[in-house]
Length: 466
Image (cartoon, rainbow, N blue to C red; front, side, top):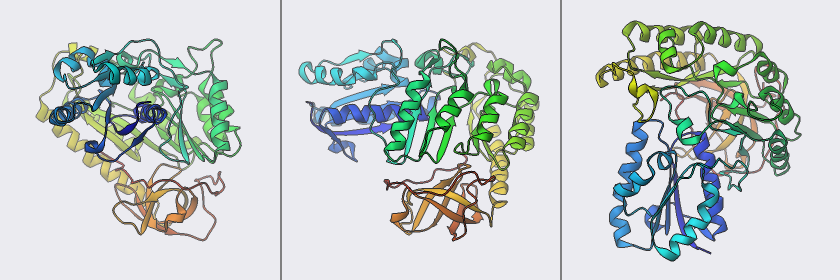
């Protein structure tokens, strides 16, 4: 056994969050226990992202800060895992020789053996073999009422701006029987909300033999008794079929929320991004989703300042945002990623142009988000309580089925329960509410009963728009 204390910090997407649950389970199996401060740890793990340059800089900055601590405590083990580790490998170890282990995204199963080996030899190593991901490793769940189920990893789309296929590999789907078995086990253990997870979740099953459709997987998981909510992320507009839309509308546990990345609202930019749809296709899809699922919330990702983007093309993106009326959005200025095809496109834009466009987009989307949240004032909706607010212990925080953050006065015994909340005041980040005695309008279609679950550690809402 390794023993001792560990500090684990995570950067990036929901897949990274899931991978950190795998890392935590591995450390638990080595008789390690978590601590809140890195100075108190015997093992420090950075689980990293490399989708944007800022993510790289954050990690590299933190690694530099730990050099004096490693010198002071040479027995400490420092691990860098995840996408940045997969991308930079040997170069990372050369830059930070005080790091003990560089572990790639395909190698989480080997973490236990590598840690024990380092403890014996004290020789730093890089382990970034691309041997395929394992989607059925033990996990240490972040809480006891929400769980992520990976159904696929990797992506075959190869968007020109995206590093994911190069660090996560091509699409690999998990057999549907394994997904359903895990869903049943989680339901039996008291979990009430499940998230089906994949880089391109609705391309699920294209690589299986025989092929399997994501809509069929939704229906199979939707038949699992005991689950109150079912979510999935992230779908690609190209793969969003009417069969998936029908399944969403017909399965009561599927939440009325779709996160559907737009990336750009101009056809020429979309072609340069290798996004095989048009602005009209996207807007028509959004209209069909809203018509089929009344009250659905649609969120998105948008990149501004892609190489060669003109002011007119950026205005086309703003026009799509105005027409679709996203409930919230994650918005970014284009970030160059070494190894991606977009690096070879001429006419990279000045930083000041990219940031000006980003701020203009944020102002527009914030206004839309505020209006859509304020339109819900007075409604009663079902909220899954995540825990007390870190800023105000007298308030609880949770999410509606539309994935809106709601804060309301409450007590810790409400943690992990589904409760009725009257929405009182809308903001950009979410809504304030109050407990309501009336039966919850659990969704705009009233599809899900209110229920209870076990308690859970506290959680804090995150901004709807960043």
